Length: 316
Ligand SMILES: [Zn+2]
Image (tube, rainbow, N blue to C red; front, side, top):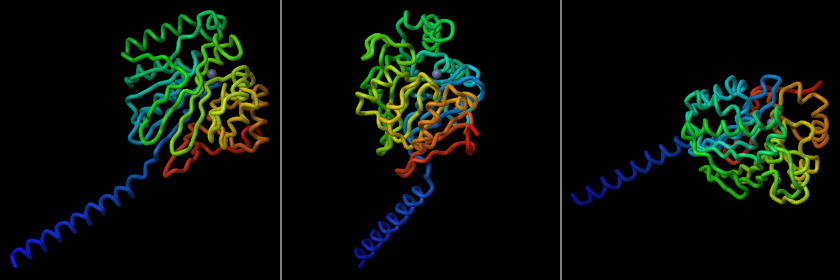
């Protein structure tokens, strides 16, 4: 009898544990509805100046920064965004190419006390770089930034095609192409065509980052690359003329296009080819000069675009 009671009690204890634990798991799933990944195209285009700043936050995974915008917009927009998002540490920063509107914002991030653990920031060929003084690349300044990064104990690494980074929670980012401006399929190029072409992927969703990819390499990729198709395209070169040709957009075949551009620039003649292509092909376009911060969210296998501001008839 006593033995039977003990067995009965053990049975009820196990049953109770299963019900309670099961309930906790179910309620945890209901409570924990945070997205699996959020990519934000931060509005580093709040002035007349263009710039790129992209933050990727993977649930239970890594924080990635792709470019940091100009100094001013980084202070006014990017750093407050990072603080608001409770980001005090960036696991990996990628500088797509050595132009100020892509790397200058690293400084205010470090000055705000935000840790950057690793940075992929390639030093360009000196001759190709210094051809652009005073408006573009400046070799001395690039070296100066490397020095500051080292002073802040940031590990500087070489970005190379083929590198794949596991970001946790099923997300990866891969450097598909990283040309050096000298050894390329189209001969010597400018600095924009050094842009890292990177694919972010999670649960079959693909987001392509293109820096300021220009016409020569953009055209070459459009004809030869078989790995650039993506549902979301970060449009190259702030959506302005000189950037990759329409054949590149066709090869990517995106469902959504994100453009880091100020209002005036996107509606100017300089962006007309790119504007017209996306309009003709009925691809929704999000421009941070209009929409503010634009979030791309992957949640329960679905991808959604969430702009800060609704904006319709952008240039009318
Ligand atoms: Zn740029």
